[in-house]
Length: 128
Image (cartoon, rainbow, N blue to C red; front, side, top):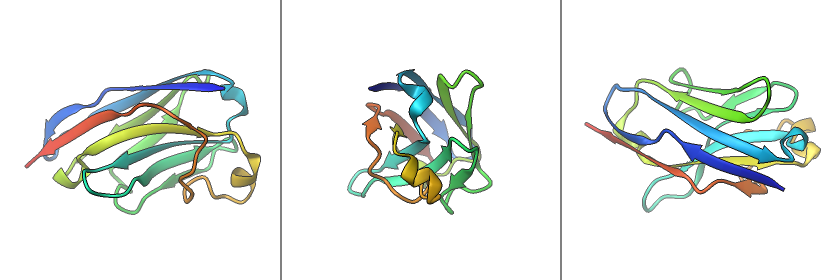
């Protein structure tokens, strides 16, 4: 079991920055994919960024160059630094973890969305 708790959301103006954090606990050492997802009103959930246990990092095209995913050495916090925010980044942001090594081996951590463990989300609102 893994527990995930997001924090750091809020309201910012276009061009601003936010840093999201995800506190993890439980069986975090056996999670092979860690990711950030978001869901805007009326839209499907989409992957934002992910990293796997081999250190590979994946970003959605829409956030490349603006967002940075990282994990601390103790692997108990997953972060998402978001710069140059746009109104279209407005969404609820979720942290997620996946224990299956298959997705890491196949380099799919950034392209599949049915992660096993999820946080409750944190709201990010970007105004123009």
